[in-house]
Figure 1: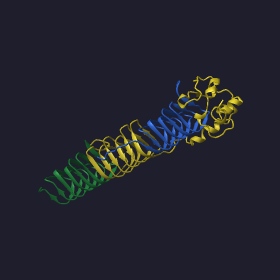
Figure 2: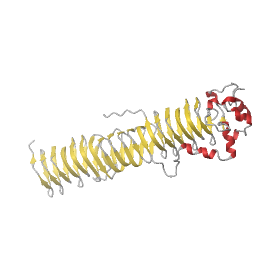
Figure 3: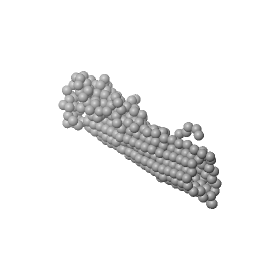
Figure 4: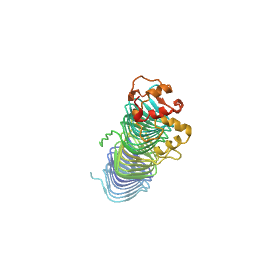
Length: 103
Length: 112
Length: 201
């Protein structure tokens, strides 16, 4: 199964889980999922994030820790530190923070 | 409507007092008092019962005001109006029924 | 990304508040307050703990907490609610279980009056009707008549009901079907027969 948060949803709190999570809405708090996280274009996250892998199309303010990889896509905004063995930053992505790839 | 067995308190009748029995009772008039039956009580569309009720099953199409304890099932049909508390293992509320009061059914919700 | 419904999967837990304007389907676990101007589907085996303010709630799983719905609350056969329900419309399917207080506003045009107010005035208005009531209340209109005290066996014979010859009708044998049509206009002695003091022959 997977979870999907639509663009008209705001969650303030903690999201944890072991299945894929797709965010098109707004989350403030903390996200810790043991699977892939996709933050869609309208997704807005103000939170500490822990995930297996992250695909970012939207906005994240907070630190991001991934087990496998992080991909910042064109048009995204990432304000925070990234800790991940692999990081891919596309042309057009906006990023302000530190990257630590030594895991 | 009961066929041979059972009783009917019809539309123009008012009972002020207690009803006890082991047969089905249909109320289309008015009852004020207590109702204790081993069987079923049906309150018809024109019926009104202002009473504490202890029955096997209760079907409400009219109006009931009082506390109800049923051994088996309480059914509130569309257009019924219930005010009071219900304690029963099975309760069915149809769309259109109006219910104001407490509902006490056996529930175990594991927070697991 | 296709247009999907917001879904909290079975393996997802949210601790916190959720607000929104679109339908949410919950299979997982929520602890917190939900404010949704849309429909909230609480599927099985989900577990929701907290206060819910929604348009429409469909409870197929379990809820601990009050549910305030502006439109309707439906409790499915597997639904369980421990909490109070505030809603104009309610449906509880056979098998559904609720423990709490239920507050519903009466619907338009449906009966709302207190039960005692409704039938009594009409029954006593017409003179024809006033005769019918005499089988169960006295002609003097005294207040308390207990059905089990009414010795109807003789009256029933006169009125043509099938009767058993026992002298005292036990509760289980009260088979009389009393309807206005079967009641004869009462003679004075029948009127008094229903008074307690005159029961013995």
